[in-house]
Length: 132
Image (cartoon, rainbow, N blue to C red; front, top):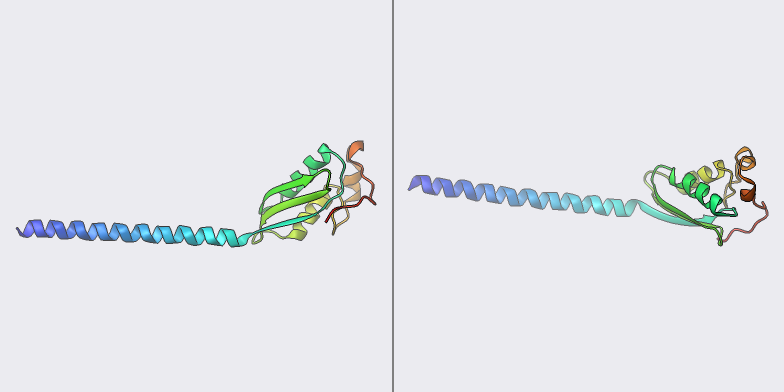
């Protein structure tokens, strides 16, 4: 009889311990998800360019910045939308990366050497309006 009670007690303790661990894991997951949500940011800004090749180069430059999860440049609007983790990067790092690839942004002029290496169709008018 004592063995039965002892066995039931052991099973009860194991069950309660298992439930407690699952609750802790769930709380940790929720806290991680919340911190990830709080660390994300999105920005939009103008970038000069002309064509699909510009789109590819501009998006590649922005997406190469550590922390950027998605960057999409609109050829017609001359505007890029960037989603990123602001604990890993900031807007100026994204502007600088795009400028280094040869394209003017609202805040940073494109690198002249990189601009000169762009294909002819990508050589934009430096006075071109950028939507903000």
